[in-house]
Structures are given as structure tokens and as C-alpha cells.
Image (cartoon, rainbow, N blue to C red; front, side, top):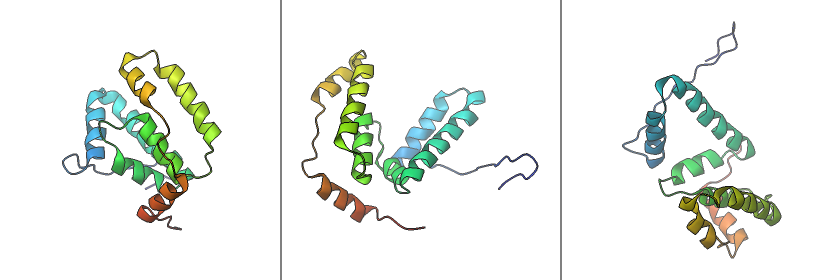
Length: 139
């Protein structure tokens, strides 16, 4: 619903942390944020999903359905790469290199970075399977 005078739009929806792992993670993250900052955080979550949806309408749903407490940034990158075939390997390598530099100083991530390798031997087959699971609906 849009407020014509100010251009503001109120968005209201429910999440179900008892039913969905992604909803539970979002709920836990919101609980950690001070009450006065939650609106800004929820807006950031919504706009981030919109940015992903602008690239491919399936991405926010795929990531939301896949996310767990163990999901890493590399898992999310792999999902995006499988859905968006336009992402070339050299772009991924540059992104991974940048992430390695940023995260290598944090001991929590160093062992994961050392073991991270491309595991997709047949990327086209993976994309094909992804498209079967999440067909590209023309809205």
C-alpha cells in the first residue's frame, strides 16, 4: 500500500520461525538487533532480496529455502553461479580472491578458505538441474 502524500510504502508480513529454517535465522538476527534499529535492518533485508530478484526472480526464494546456520558465503555464491550462467569463472575467481583477502585474517574462516575449491565438474548439468527445480516463470 502506498501513501500518495509522502511516497512512503508500508510493507507488512509474517515469518514463521517454527516452520522454516530461513525464517528462524531471520528472526534470531532481528532479536539480536536493538529495537530502534530493527526497521532499518528489515528494510535492508527486503531491499537485498529485491536486488537479487532484479537479477533473477528465482534467486531470493532459492537462497531463502537453502539457508541454514551452516550456510557459508561460498554456498550462496555457488547457488547464484548455478542460477545465473552469465557469471564467468574469472569473475568468480576475482570475487573469491577478494573474499580470501578479507576473511583470511579471521581464524573462524581460514580452514574453510583453505579447503574451498570448485566442486562443480559439470556446471551446465548443475544449471539444468537447478532450472528443473526452480523454473524461470515469466511473470
